[in-house]
Image 1: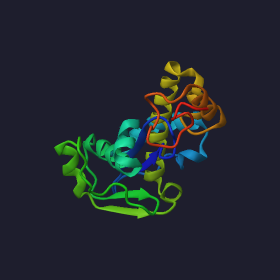
Image 2: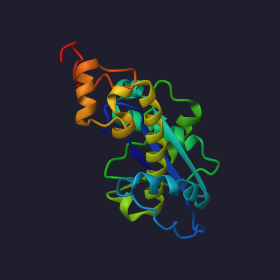
Image 3: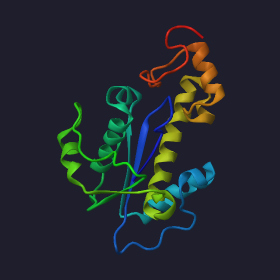
Image 4: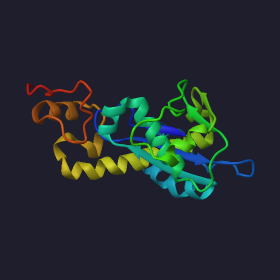
Length: 199
């Protein structure tokens, strides 16, 4: 599993999961950490990854859930939502990084099915997105799915530049926040420009 959108002041926190097993063939050519790929390369890999994986899914947590549960809690919700979609549940989850954000901490609003998935053993590995093909593939699926959401939301909120910055804190995004204030897609618990009505 891998996450995207953790540090963005707007948009969902998104988690991708790709299941492989000991019968899986080698990873498709070009699969690597989504941050190392051009958008067009990421998009072209999605159907290839979907065929290669034993199972795959993407889960999201909304900005208000980041506000309510914090980033870690929101990532957990997104991860459990992704896991709950799988036809083939994993025996083990490998997370990129040193921090286990997936293991149990039941939040209000978590379904029984999501809570029941909290038993899945979790292993963390720093740089797993650059050394493990299934984690890299999960990052690609998550990034493409989240980027598509942000491009769609940019139609409703064109001033923030989400079609380009995907909700991250670029100068264009921060200038629009200071001028216009936050939208429903912003993480209101974060320190954002114009939260007190000033610029």
